[in-house]
Image (cartoon, rainbow, N blue to C red; front, side, top):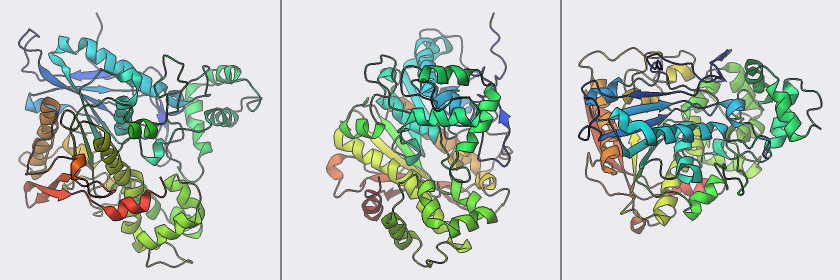
Length: 494
C-alpha cells in the first residue's frame, strides 16, 4: 500500500531571488498532489464529472514547488466544484541542461510535466475527475510551460483548456538557449570538471553526473552575467525534429506564429506592475542601483535579454526615462518608470502579442481567447519579498494574483473571516472554475471577446476584464487592451 498522505520534497534548487540562498530540496521530487472536495463520494458513473485544474508552478525554471504551503488547495476545495492537481518538475541545471544532442537533449523539466499530465489523463477519473475537462494553469514560468504544452507534439490531447498567468513562451526569458553545449561546458568548468572544453558531449554528461547534485545546483550562479541576471540560465531548447521524444522541434515563437499548436480555449492574464519582481530588488539595493546607473547601457540589455544596442538604450530613455540625463540615466524616483519598462518588456507585451497572434490564426469560435487583468490591491503583496521587507505600497505586483487562487501560509497569514480579500478569492477562483467548465471566460461585465475581425492595427484590440477594489467590494471593469504605442515600440526589439 502506497502512503500518499504526506508532503514530498521540492525539487533541488537555489532560489537566486532570495538573499544568500541555500540549496534546498531533493532529487527525489517528481510527485504530484491531488485534492478533491471532501463532500465528493466514492467515484461512480455520476460523480466522475468534476473539472480538473492542473497547476504548474512558476519560479523561472530554477525554483518553485507544489507544496500546499505555497499552493494551498483550500480556496478551490471550498467551492466543491473542481479537483486540483499540483505538479513538480526538475529545475535549473538538473531540469534544463542540454548538450544539443542525444547525450542530454534537454527540456527534462518540461518532459516531467508531460509525464504528470499523462498520469492525470489516465487516472483522474478514479478521483472523481472528468478526463475531458482538464485545464492546465501556470503562473510566470508555469505560464510559459502551459504555452509550450500547447505547442509541443508530446502534449497533444492531454488537456482541454489553458490559463496563462503572467507569461507565455514569447517572453524574453524563454528564448531558447542558442548554444546549449557551450553552456554545458561552462557549467562543467565551474564545478572543476577536467577538460570540460574538450570532452565529447557523452563524456561531459558522464562527468557532470559524478558531481554531487547539491554542489552542481549551488555552483551555477557563477555563470550569471550581472547580479542574478539572466534570471533563467537553464531554459528550454529546440531539439532534433527526428527525435520521437523531442518536446520542442522549433522555436516556440515560430510555432505560435504559424499556428503549429493545439487550438483549445485559453485565457491569458497579467497584473499592472509585473516588473516589480526585478525592479524593486535593484532600486532597494544601493550597490546594484549605483552599478546600473553607472553602467546603464551595458547592464540594461542583460536585464532585458536583448542584444546590446545603442538604439535600444536611446529609445528606452525617450519612452520611459525622458526626464533623466546621460550622466544619471536612472534616479531613485525612476522606480515606477523602471517597473513600467520591465513590465512591458518581460510580461505585458509578450502576453498581449501571444493573444494577438493566436486570434489571427485560430478559429476563435471553437477555441476562444480571453484576457483578464488583476488590479485588485489586497493587504498582502509579494512586493515585501522583492523589496527586502519594505512594506511600502508598490501596487499590484508579479505573483499577487496567486493570493486569490491559493492559500499560501508559508508567506502570508490567512485572511481574517469576512475580510474583503475573501470576496476577491471567491470571485477569482470561481472565474477560473467557470472557464474550466465552459471553455469561455465568464462575462462578469459585458465585453467583446478577442476576435481577429475586431482588430484595427498591429496592437491587440479586444476587451479585458479587470478586477479592481472599490471600498470593500470587488468590481470588474471592462477596459480595452489596445496599446498601439507599446506594440510599435517593442516590435523593433523582439
